[in-house]
Image (cartoon, rainbow, N blue to C red; front, side, top):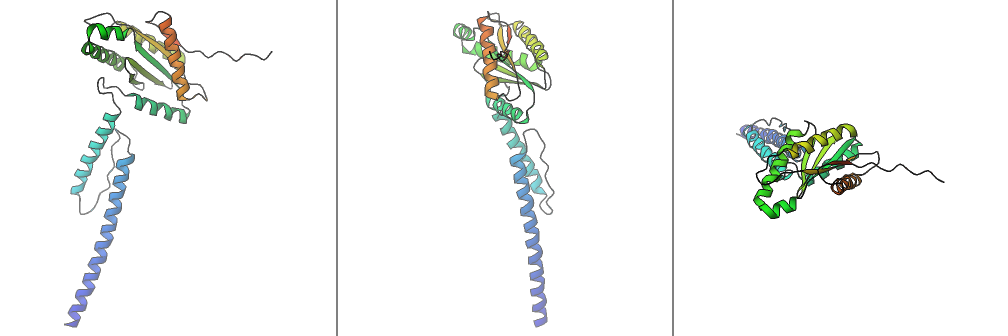
Length: 236
């Protein structure tokens, strides 16, 4: 009888040790999954390690991951146009700045949008914004990033692009916006373009693109202007 109790005790301890080890392994794998859920960028598939004994959790983890990815993507998009929003664009500009990657930024402003909105109403204004957004989506190259930057302003980020090529893209975009068939009134847009220079911050580039946009508006609208920094003056 004592021998039986001793064997039972040994078996109990052995099972407890095995269970404890499996529980530790499972918890460790679940911690890895949670970390991946937190750091995996939107649109990138989540790699889920196999967890022996509780394979049914994989489907739940995949569902949670998909939901989190969808919410993250939704937070980066403008609800009206479906383009990226200003928050995403500012984050991307900061990342490019940290990487010292060359890029060009274009700011697009619909000419006389406030007058259009006041004359034809906000629903008509919203439809116009959607029309311009669709032109941006079609006109942008595969690696360009179009965004709604706020109000009637849009932005187009052109990574790894020289200034002359960016100007051709901007001019093509201006022409395509002018060709929009709007049931209320003809539409035009003004564009300001600025190129990244080594050492310039995202805030500086935004200021320069906005300054070029101001020049386009002052010059009669429906045109593309580029910010060209003044050459340093020679010492007397």
